[in-house]
Length: 328
Image (cartoon, rainbow, N blue to C red):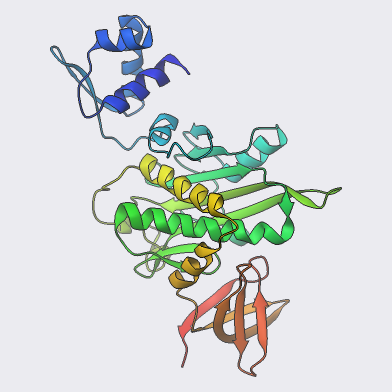
């Protein structure tokens, strides 16, 4: 751990109390000069650190993404995460794929303050702004069959919804497949990709990425998105930090993983769905269809009853919902 990282971790642990430079130097076995230099570097990065001649230094709550801030809010019971925080990224999904190729370990998390070329499902772009969102991808090495892939995306959606419900106290809904909505507007999109081992027929790597609109003000969205998208704090100042939300998302994710093969999360997913019972239209193999969404299977598939009473079972890779209307 670098000197700067040690200083930041100690300041965060001590907050909101002050800690003297001398005490910090003793605890970390560093010189007072090294402490002073690290604090100045942290301030330049945007961390808010108060200083008092008699009391020392105090870390004031500020929304700067940091591996240290995320780690401090993680549940000790979850696996150790390898965390990288970037100022910017073309795509954290690409970063995670490269990490997989380079042999980075299981549970490698890459977080960026802004994505320069963010993409959602089917390559759709979405809006990104520095300091106002969460863009992250996790590399997992599950060694499971392809049939189990859908389970990860469902688990992720439930974990994000739980974390938002817990920390922000605003009810979330899930639009099949994996978009999180609040008050009828999208606040989060999730993307999952698998890399396979041809010989074993198993998934060697799973990468789960997401983009969360955290504190974008409603008037900051492009005009064409204002009616469709929002953020967790579109009008008010955030009541939690991005680090805290990131940690809570992974706390919930690994909690569900640790409970497998229990399937309670599936019922939670269904209860939060605002697609079930409504008329949906979609395109499959170049043909347009319309029907009522009647169920979500244990594999996360959407069951749609067409007007002729036949059923279509839709997987995440097959379709894009083009409209959702109340069923008559």
